[in-house]
Image (cartoon, rainbow, N blue to C red; front, top):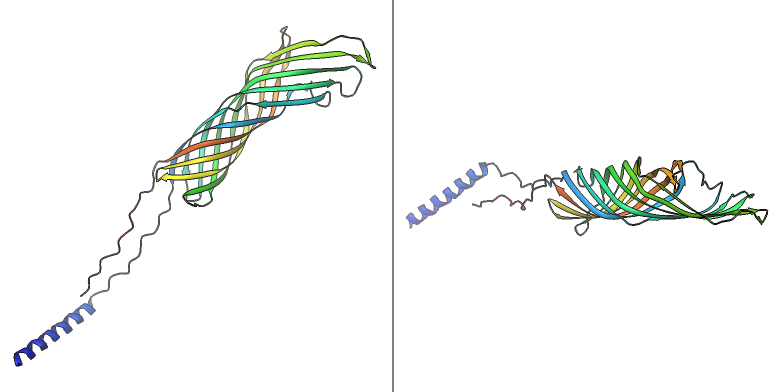
Length: 290
């Protein structure tokens, strides 16, 4: 019996000694999860799309068909054309990025008409029609900035703006028309109609250009993001070479296309050059009891 009591006493003393030793040990530091790293870095981009282009007005360089001289009913439009774009950019943080892009806008056919009554102030009266054709293409270099507006269901809407330069090229310009001349005070004195034809060589012009952007982005994986984007582009003016009539007479002035704009729809892909690594959720430190 005494032996059992001695064993119990020795065990109790050993437990008390172990508890005291454990109390002297430093406590493990509290577990703090690692901070979430903000993503950023360089990326490449490529886009394809199509344009819907307009021109505000078109007129000869010497204003011979100016609206204050002629009663002019003018219509004109460009066909849809392809857009091809590449660029390099930088993602500064999870809401701000910017890029520099080079864009080629393919040949777009132009058709336009002037219905003319002249002169607008009276006197010798005549009327006529001019039917214009031509093609247009552009090279555009632009610096763009974007604001990403948050992510919902893996989709990130964004807005942006850009400024740069556009090289507008006009080619294959022709003017087929007919003119009726012959009324003074209501009395015909000269016949018609008279056919007219003119053409001009190709020419190019550099302009200041600007754009407004909006769209949706979807991050497929850390390295690739796809975009569906819209852009409103103001490309400035276009011009032909000096216009010549069918008999070789050179008018010495070009036909000018004023305020060319476009509504663009593009599909794009962004490739991150240094994508953020994907981390597994960290495990809390092991705690031993006893």
